[in-house]
Image 1: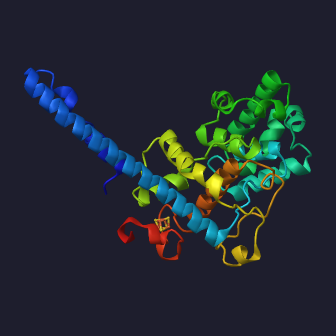
Image 2 (image 1 turned 90 degrees about the horizontal axis):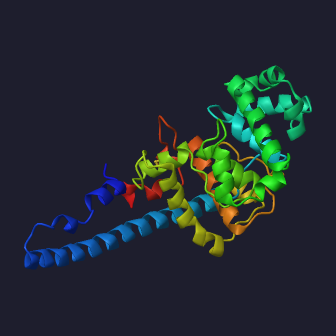
Image 3 (image 1 turned 60 degrees about the vertical axis):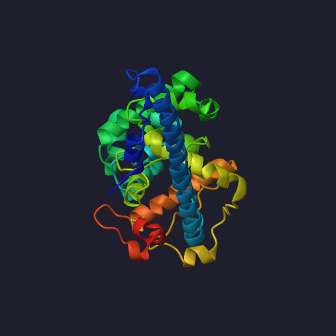
Length: 304
Ligand code: SF4
């Protein structure tokens, strides 16, 4: 399988290495190198354009098939943040059980997590797995928001995106996917969330290799999807036609967080992430790709 990033490495212009040649020869080679460089730049641009165009086609095909996915399933921004911590390394069904425990104990709030004893919190979120680590991490988040933002999510989310992202990434247990989920879904900041499903689909469609960096994948999606925010109509209301034609596993019902007012750009990022989760969970599984039933099947490299 040949990947674009390998092509990029192979096509680095060689004219920089010609320093020991005679002047005339050097000039000639520099000219040739300059032409090569121009050709390579053009071919890289074409590759990038093609990759971005593929992403836009995927978005349109998936949205046409399934409609809005209503991410994130949460009743409040804080609940969304707790979900982002608890969902690490576990299935969402386990997160729902832990959330239900916190809700029935009336602790699903900043003040609730602040007040509860660590040992009690551990037991309440036990169904989500890694419960000791996760309980400590939730406590760390509360300390952070108390110390830096007086306990106010509104103040926290008013920070510029890149500064808040750096702050979140400095917290124990917050990697890029968790930080970006919090920024996008709870804070309506324009960042695309990259997950395992995203990488798997890109690799299987030979758009980017599985080991591409988080930033590389994120940048590709953000560049590809930004123009759609200008041009697409993202109907936020689920239609019966979409749901009838929908996924084997139905999308989440609309939630307070999923229907929150947001910019067109954050809505497109939100929707694309939800659609990719639908592909990953229902068709593009780790051990098996059910391509014949998947809406992205026409875009497989061998069929393009
Ligand atoms: S299941 Fe097949 S067609 Fe669908 S995204 Fe995965 S590789 Fe592509």
